[in-house]
Structures are given as C-alpha cells and as structure tokens.
Image (tube, rainbow, N blue to C red; front, side, top):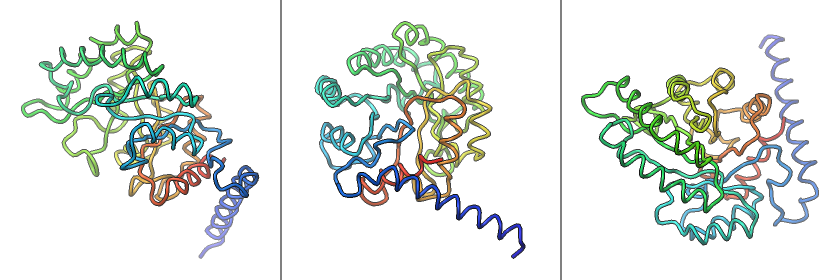
Length: 297
C-alpha cells in the first residue's frame, strides 16, 4: 500500500472518530437516560416517514413515537383513510409539524391528458387537507409509463398538468413537490427518474410553488454524484428526503456519506425539513441514533 493511500486511510479514520466524539459529547447528557430523544440537538430538521418507521402501529401512535425520538416533524403518504381532524389536534398538542404528504400517487398518472381533470380535483381536495394540518408541501408523482407515449410526450403531459394546477398551489400557499423515482431497484416502468428531467420540468412550469421532492435515495441509484447534482439543480429543490443504499435503511447502513450530503444541503442554504423515508434496520431508537450521527460535520 502506497504512502498516499495510508495517509488517506488515516484521515478517514480520524474524521470518523471525530464525528463519533461529537455525537458522544452532544448526547452525553442523555447517556444516563435511556428514554432521552436521540435526535435532540440535531442541526438538520428531520421528518420521520411514519409509513415506513412503525409497522403495525395505529397511525396516531406513530406520531407520538416520532415525538418520543425527538423528530420535529413527520411525513406520510396519501391522506385518504387517515384521521385528519385527530391528526391536526394531536400535532398541535405535541408541537410536531406535518412536513408533507402525498397528494397524487403513481396511478392514474398525470402523464396522461385524460387524467388531468381528476388531478386538478385531487389537488384542490388535498390543499384543503393541508390547511387543516398546517402543512406547506405535498408530493405529486408523475406516473408510470403509458403504452404508445414516448418519455418526452409523457413529460410534456406532466408539465401541462403542473401548469394547470400551479395557480391553485400559489393561491393556497402549498408547494407541490414532484418526486423522481429510480427504475433500477424500486420503480421499473416509471416515467421520471433522476434530477435532470425533473429540474427541466419544474423550470418550464416556472412556479415557486412547484418544485422537486429530491429523494436522495432515488437519486443515488439513478445518477450518483449527489452533491454535484444538488448544486446544479438547487433552484428547483423544494424538499429533501433520504435513505441509505443498498437496503433503504437509515444512514450509516449503506454506501452514502450522509454527513457530507447534509452539509452540502446546509451550505446551499436549505433549512427546511429532510424526510427520513426509510425502514429502520434494527430498532427505531438505534436508527434514530445513527441518523443523529450522520448529522455531524
């Protein structure tokens, strides 16, 4: 092994030790209290995706569990079937925010013109739910591939759909965040993946209330160079999400150096919530502790 490689290994080891020492100092006061929130004191404002963190738990109890771990916010998928009035009251009582939820999913796709009436109706309905929840952002999904349509045609239809509803989002003060997926692992047959097309679509829509749900897990699988792509498309970033890869578990279980990526978000000026859309690899508390460790730089 050459001297430069040895030096690099020494530096990486030192950096890792320093990060762990910072986490230990930050959480030292909690060491004697096993019930202390592991996320207390984080620089990044994390939002737990309650759909993935607590299986088999009643929905409102998931919000309580998120609060116990120190999450300042939660996110969830479709609002249909959720106890919205109870959630509104509970989130106010617990002083935990609703960072975002899904207003429009994979099917039917907004990448087909015939679905645009339904898309507009769903956005109007979801904005009313967002008002109840004091929620500022809602995810929308482009749709799966449509037989007979090219990707360019589907993307034009997505642009048309978003232009149609952007006056609603602007009037309501609710940001629509378009989420690109990945087609290598999770969403084969979806029409939108990676940041390049999503940035182009949102720039063409041209609204401060239509931006990207920048899921770093999907972006890592689709394109890599997470920090570089964030810098290039930051003007269209509306919300960030994370999970490690492979496995879609919490940071520290895969290949992504999230301390570097979170630092990049902060340096670019992102101060909003970061959704943690992952399944804990072990217990939820251990996952939250690893998440806190990734927030050190």
